[in-house]
Amino acid sequence: MTDRLSILHLADASAAAPAPAPEDVARYALGLGDDALVLAQRLGEWISCAPELEEDVALGNIALDLLGHARALLTYAGSAWGETEDDLAYFRDEPQFRSRWLFELPNGAAGGLDFAFTVLRQLVASLYFGALYRRLASSQDAMLAAIATKAVKEVAYHAEHATLWTLRLGLGTDESHGRMTRALWDLWPFVGELFDSDPAVVALAENGRAGVAVPPEELRDEVLTAVQATLADAGLPVPDAPFAAGGGRAGRHSESFGRLIGEMQVLARAHPGATW
Image (cartoon, rainbow, N blue to C red):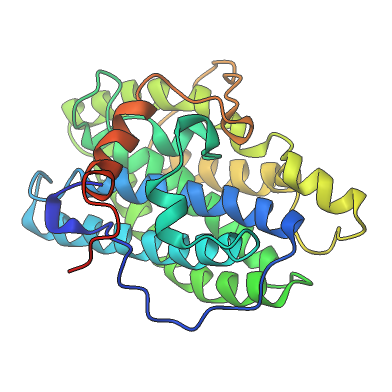
């Protein structure tokens, strides 16, 4: 993972291990955990590079919140297979990750650091996570419900932070408005995958566990309505662009994903079993 403050080092887990998750529940938790882990890694790239010192702190704290969600979800998922959060984060290969494309894309369409793109992704991501965790807090699986209950309080702050920056930049100068408009066009094709059917959710329903998971299709209207309302307040029109196919839940990833997890995993793979 990134060397910046080593914010994504997972080896210091101290919480007691939960009861093992049923395997179908674990597969669902794995996808959610990968989403949070990968977005945390992307946000970590802003440490020491944000446009304001306060944003270094803010984005770092949001990344740490997401990392906390990832740790809880991956620990629970790994309990089904006798694996730790470190095993799942550091020692899986690219096709074994289940993160959606929106979370793994670089922080700018050209591969560099684009604050406008990051702000808009955080707006979509935080509103999506908020809608997801509010529903998941009523899950019939007690562990998932507990994780979601804690997480929903944190993503509410993330949504507020992203909303304020969206308004500030969208309603700011011609330059900031133009950059937000261009970034929105780059981002928008990857929003639709968030609401694609999740094979893990389908499997849970087939196994009589429909009350455990949240079908992502059910979040579409709520999330898109909230996103579009904020964009309208910021004077940013929703792009008339089709959604991309994605495929993250099936292990198909964007071109940049291999480099992302290569950086994320290099230290653990170079020194397996090391602690500090």
